[in-house]
Amino acid sequence: MTTTPIVEARAIHKHFGHLHVLKGVDLRVAEKELVFLIGPSGSGKSTLLRCLNRLEDPSSGSVMVDGIDMLDARTDINKARQRIGMVFQSFNLYPHMTALGNVALALRKVQGMGKAEAEARAGKALDRVHLGDRADHYPLQLSGGQQQRVAIARAIALEPRVMLFDEPTSALDPELVGGVLAVMRELREDGMTMVVVSHEMGFAKAAADRVVFMADGMIVEEGNPADFFDAPKHERTRNFIRQIERH
Amino acid sequence: MTGWDRFADSFFNARVMAQYLPKIIEGFWLTVVLALCIIAAGLALGLLLALLRAFGIRPLNWLIIFVVDLFRALPPLVIIVLLFFGLPNAGVELSGFVSAWLALTLVLMAFSEEIFWAGITSVPKGQWEAARSTGLGFVQTLTNVVLPQALRITIPPLTNRTIAITKGTALASVVAVPDILGAANAGVSFSFNPSPLTLGAIAYLVLFLPVVVLGRWIETRFAWKR
Image 1 (cartoon, rainbow over the protein chains, first blue to last red):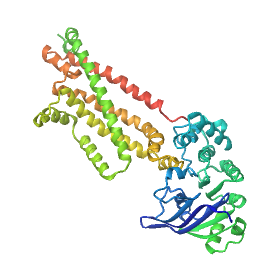
Image 2: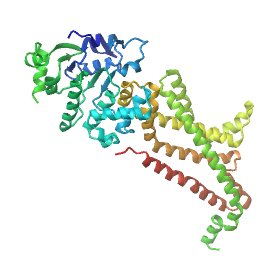
Image 3: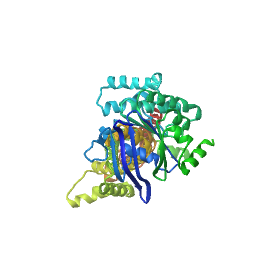
Image 4: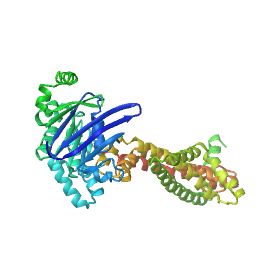
């Protein structure tokens, strides 16, 4: 990876009270790279992801995204966050708005588009996740997989430079996972930079450029998927992979 | 005279009812105006306090909680009497109508603030995070994402509370306001017959039954689309 990184987190520490969740984590993500963050629960991978768009404030360290210092008090965080799309485990769609309304909200309120322009852009984003025909549906009228794809559309409509996925398929019934992963794969093929926290090892093997294994708030090991899964260097990594692949 | 005749003569005396009906109708409209003023001001102030509280400014929140707890703890009648009989000693003279309006407005403000606040805090954190992650600011998230959901949750308890407190307009009769109960009481005193009270009860039903039904309608109207 010789290109300048889009995401560069350095020496991130995060404390929750007495809990030391992140203990000096470095993460660089190059343009168009798909990085997979894996690790046992409580290893700090979600917290690290949330530090990248400052849903959590790191206790110390630095985060640069697309050349913007995310932790600088002078940075307009609302502006910076539009370059960073985020998809959540529980979708978090707004239940009082249609799929189209969900996608159009930030386009109107943050990017200042008129209603017609925002809805046209939102419609295109829904087309990209193959839900153009569900634009008028409310979240509760959609399946979990469809809701998650609307959530992806909500993020990509803002044309972010990087997308963060926080366990995007963990809340889904198994038969709905495929549709969401297919959309993520298409995003990747379109050249989107992505950081994914997930337990979908098949997807990691097939689509990831790099796998980062975290445990106890530190990065234990990282590498390309082939090396990582076939020849893990650390004992902890081997144990984790064995546990995951048992089912 | 049988027992039934005595009962009918006391509570359904047509002559007395006809005589005091105009006064009761005047009292009805006065009660309507008083109730509307209380609802408008009380709910607006309650929502304002809940929104201010959402900003999480510590000293301000302590003040809000103190005021809210104060007016939730005091009986409305005590507040009315304090305003009407107590304030003149401090050089402020309020009419009975204004005393009753202000007292019940403060009580509705206090209870509705708690209901609005409960509604705001019941919106999942993920809704805030999703909105903020797309670049919406705090106030934009509050008004576009959180508040519409919070208001939906608050409608049932809010209509209940509003009706309960608005019925407190009857307390205004204590400070000589000729509302429904005031007019009915006056009628009883002059005619030595309780029939005006029956009229008063009917007037309250005519006033509040539609409000109760309206509350039910609003609840179904704003349910999540499934």
